[in-house]
Image: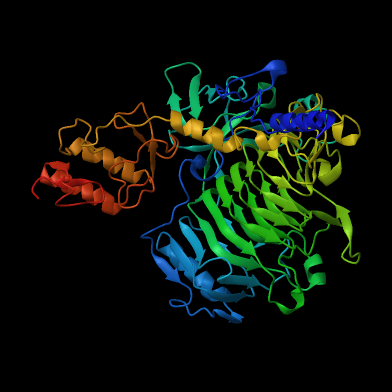
Length: 631
């Protein structure tokens, strides 16, 4: 080999070593903190709160919950030969009467000629596995803007309590003149009016018109602390603000009640495709929808080729999984494919988030929709994460009579989605976010202060975020367009921040969400209780006295508990404090951050006995690790 060839090979080796070198973003150093701000005012939101219980708990198995078998108990036909709508709905209703349970669909094929509605918390629809349990729907008439499986809570909002001071972006605390109407653990919405000044500030005069003069909830939170000893009163939230709340827009807090909670659907395949023309006769028909939900989940759900005769090879009429007006939801390990209606008027969205906070869509695949992954419609979406998602074949069909369409993208669609994250996704079509101007009833600026992190694929990121936007780590085959040219760029200055072009595969950490979550969980407090002392034993005398039992009854009546490093036992009523600490010792039969009646009765045993002690594992074992002294 001659000298020139050796030099060339050495050059290639050097280039390879440099390109393969791990690197970190300058905006996410190892000592990063959520309040860090860097050059030119750049910063990354802490998006680690997305998902079921803020990502602090795994999706539960619901072990021990009552099971309502739709075949054995309700005579559903698992061959696909007859309509099973009434049988499955009866099982859902029975679970509601029982206070919750698992509606179980054994392996088989289930035909539904109607729709299913879940309106009670603690209801889980579970199949025997993807490909084993298959359910398909045939109804299309009068289905516009509806879903074939609908989870919905009767959400209500209380009176306005005005902010006394402006709310700062990324702050946990807001000030009000009178906080007496709220309690720790309350769920609230913080919002403000879409005033002319708000519209003008964002250069949207004449574009943002649909919601002008209306109050919009921008964030939904749990209250973790209230201080009425200061003036004005202070209210602390479990998750920080995502955008400034300015007094000129009359920001206020409203109590929220009526969310449907602890519901899920999992381990089955679903289809609702019908005749092609019929699918185009209705707009926005979804397979699964969660509205006004909190701490719920969708996992291990696939769409499939509907066996309904006229459906051909299609899976879905229009939409797949829709989450709207909800918060702290996880959609995991799902695949949606082949929508029929991929035309205008909001069709063909396979994974849709609308007016949501802290929704996590992870390890999901969307193929052959119109916008496979999308934030859609209205103000109020923030803190949502798309993690390790794959998208291919987004297509805008111009008409049902034209057999081809125009290339489309996943996208931020409407009204300034804030502090969201596209994380470690593979995009073979692309993702759009920018000034959509008058499209979609004046969508205008569709996104701000959001991040594309470690993005790969053969598609294109088209990003013109209002104010700050970030594209950090992209693969060598992925195109990026941030040129400040054209309608999409109008009024979005400055140009979005780019870093790590073509070397995203070496970015550390590979996932921003998972890194921020691990960091936050490590910082959450752990109650300082020795291993031989029961959590309910506040004076640590190896007995449960009346005051300690009454405290446990308080946690029982509160329908849930969470961490609180400032309380005597390390816990608080409600879920406002997170679940990063050790579970309460009384929460031992099923670790679900609730004290059940059986778990309360166990503590009453200790109270009646007058003494408890750690069990000798050689002679006895119990769920909580403690035994009565008389044993």
